[in-house]
Length: 337
Image (tube, rainbow, N blue to C red; front, side, top):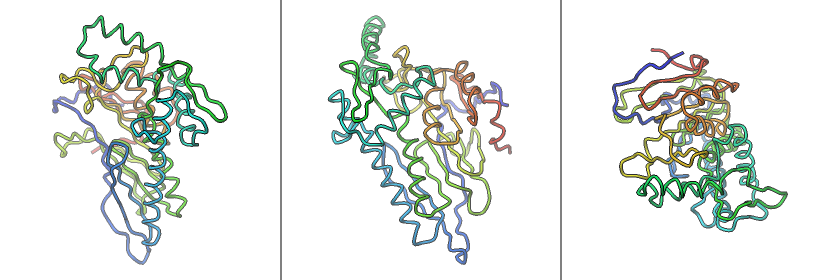
């Protein structure tokens, strides 16, 4: 276990997840080759890699992107044709799709499981900070945040057989902390349905795998410092299906001085800065996606305690002082040089 060891070489840690699998082609007699395609989607670049014969490869890749597009079309709060946009606009939506229902039901479950640290109803708070609340005095900030907090809380979402609605006027959701993970899980199912048994999806800080690598070796991912791609903070190795997700406060800020970032504590309404990044290894992408955000917001002490209480979940965390904190079982996956 790595406890509070410092990583002082870099002035800014921006963690990316990079798939380190060797670019190879298995002998043609086996009929299996590596195929990959990258598309822009969900505010990032998503790379789908499959190991298959030529006939099924493109079918599998297309099926994955089609499934992710379906989910994006349900979950976007910026596309006026998307269901989540319509829910925010009207305060309700009738006959919601299976994907929107799944995303919101899962979000409510995680809201309770994390004691409210994962909360999709924080969009009114995000809107405040995006509109320039950071320019106001501390007194004005607190006053406006307090008002917005009155209409947050995933327990105020009402779900019936054919309708999703909000209990309070002005409520809005954001599904950014769960959609990519859910989409990867669904995309891997779509690939599997094409008869493909090995695949990996890299979606801007989140990675999910299907099956084992064709050569029998482990999947390997690395946390890399983008200021110097020659440097790696850590590498993880695993076989079978596994998911890795990283949340960080180093890319998106509301204020020019970078003191107000996009990761808000739903309990206070203010951004959090105790971590630089939190990476979660879990058995499915939805869980990894949600937990990387939730644990980040909890902070080092509570986040570590919560992570250690979960089965089949490991974390690699970098706090604001560049200390590296890990859960007790991380060595199962950590690659040592």
